[in-house]
Image (cartoon, rainbow, N blue to C red; front, top):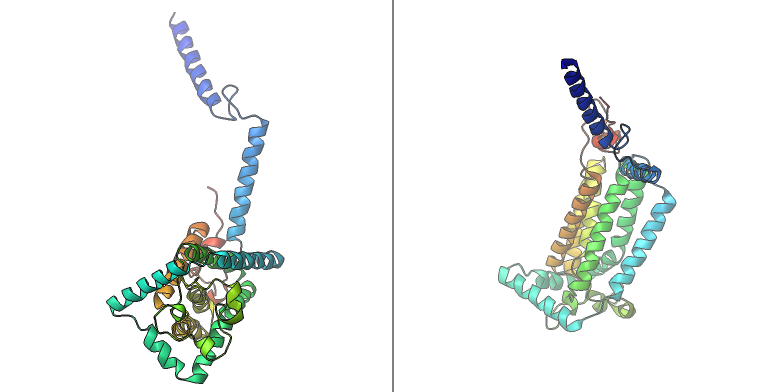
Length: 316
């Protein structure tokens, strides 16, 4: 009788263990196991996630044709959306008046004085007009090319920052049309491109008919120049080149105010978009774009990716 009782208890315990084992998918002979289609889907999903993770962390140089196509399509969409925004003159003028009044109440309305002072120096303001029209694109493209060639491991993350920043700017253009100071009614600002008969703004002269004149908030001249400046500062080796990196957005701020293309608060909007772009890239890549590596004994100048992107997990 005792042996029967013990045998019964042992059998019960064994059955319970078998049931528990069978309840885990893929284990035991009982329970619910995934069918072939489910297992295939799980395997495919894991493979896709692994591939995306590897691509995000790989120091390999991205495919050139893909990057060129991506930049081309992105700029086309940027121009299309930016210039397709309805030009709401009344609302844009109202926003400009509100910003100008706010700056005056805060005692920081310096744009008018700077605009008139710099305009009195002909060669200087003409140079600024051409600066505004050209360097915005030339420097940004140049930094992208330099990143691609010299720091391929950081390229994708840094490019993501730029794209997110620009996408946020398009939202601002659409929902907050803003007349620049030179087009502000009753502002007394000088349209330096028009007065000096130079080309320096898509919203002046013949180009005005195909360009949204009220896409001023946020300023992408500041957003892009800050991106370029920070990239050069953190990744360039020569001290004088890094100094130029910091000087570039500062000079750009002076140019956009002197030419009356932006209020300085537009620059604040551009900087905010850039900060959100860096945050988005941080969430995606799990490391700050320009975070310095801390690999012991490694020559820091030769590293193109943060330490976290190169370490391989060791299974225990």
